[in-house]
Length: 328
Image 1 (spheres, rainbow, N blue to C red):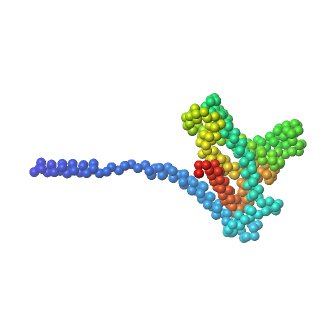
Image 2 (image 1 turned 180 degrees about the horizontal axis):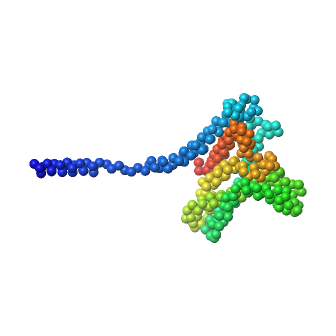
Image 3 (image 1 turned 135 degrees about the vertical axis):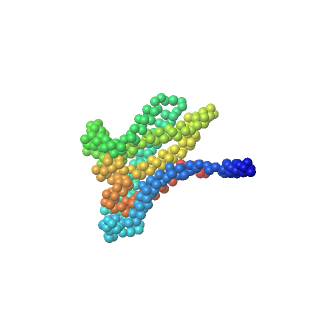
């Protein structure tokens, strides 16, 4: 009896162990940790980007201007609908529609600086990545070209302001050589001031554009170029029929980011020409900053919304224009 009982207990223990072994093992899941690690980005974006953007749109429908004829206090601005947007497109006391003027100035200075920036950056990128030239010391040139990007724009602008002022060395040199009139002022003159702003932006950003284009060219499989050369393709055909089409995504990225930065141009013209009150270099962000200084948050919010719409439309236009052949 005792042995039979022991056998029964042993068999029950064995069955229990078999049941434990046959139970499906729980697999460790790391999915939640992935969500936890990326949650910080969404939380920061929500608090510091999305919420301020929504508040900006909200503020654009309220009147903060005490001289508007609407009863306004700092604590309780009045809802005014699209009145802030309408006033932005009205003439001021000088008969000028400021938002048209500032948008035009911004686009002109960006285009003057962006076109040579793209052309020179592309030429340098092609030279430095050429397998035929095999230039040495490209790392040094990359660093040298990128260095201006590390310097604050306000510091660069202050330096140029000293160089081109009426007591500066460049003004003195040009005047002694008879290239400019005696009382010429680079900062006050609209054309020269715009050229200076565009040149500063070109100097600061062409190195960054060169490095991006070099990275794009180096990501293209070299065997494609070798096959084209073996088939007798000239350097010109390799450039226009192979390199540039394959480089199109990088070019689109560079153009759109450059355009976004250009539309937000502020520090260079602010430091360089603001004291001269040069209307030819007053950008849309400078106009927005003026309303912020007056605590007219409604008008400033309306400018921000308009700038967002302009940026979105131009970005879509650039993207569609460059990629139109692929859409067919």
